[in-house]
Image 1 (spheres, rainbow, N blue to C red):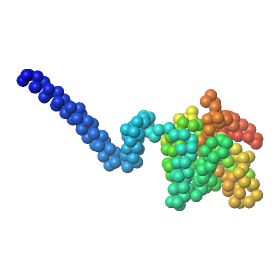
Image 2 (image 1 turned 135 degrees about the horizontal axis):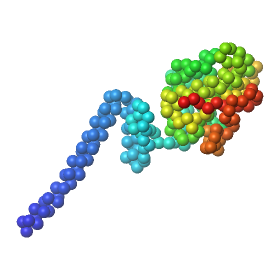
Image 3 (image 1 turned 30 degrees about the horizontal axis):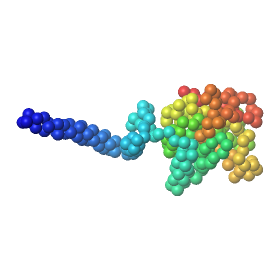
Length: 258
């Protein structure tokens, strides 16, 4: 009888092993989160959100990119991304950032982020301004939460340009689009196969080119989160020629370098 009671006593204390393992794991978790919060508040929020998703029964996608915490946001649907983009752009406008020159809309192509050229480029130039980098820093992470193809379109007004760098509006519109593409790939790690660029010069205006205000509306960059029906997995998105064509009322597309 004595030996049997000792066996029962041993069995009752085995839970302590599991309990001690749990406490050790929790301690390691809190140390990790504390470290993130001290080093980078944004990384802390990202990791905390992913841990919450995992503990709620979801799953996280590993991210091995530079500066990553090891996880990225779960893929979202186009309406979810559009809603988040609208909220972010509204916040930029309230902060008197470049948001007053950026709008989010929806059309048959998908979700469109329309950027007036002065928010991203100086007149007649194709080099991204600091305001462009600031805006993309807020927009790019949201776009990465979707798996949809992305098209960057460059548009100009009908005022001719003829400089040492650009002999026509075709070259200017294409160059601006590819600059955005290159920046998204090099800075935010967008897969090159998921993103493309097209230039339309003045041939797809959103307003008549009859006043200075209307011409300013036509000088724009459009970042389009394409609907699946507008994408071709075997080639460039629908509506893109995929090549540099002679000037004509149609698109010019260049594959991004790198």
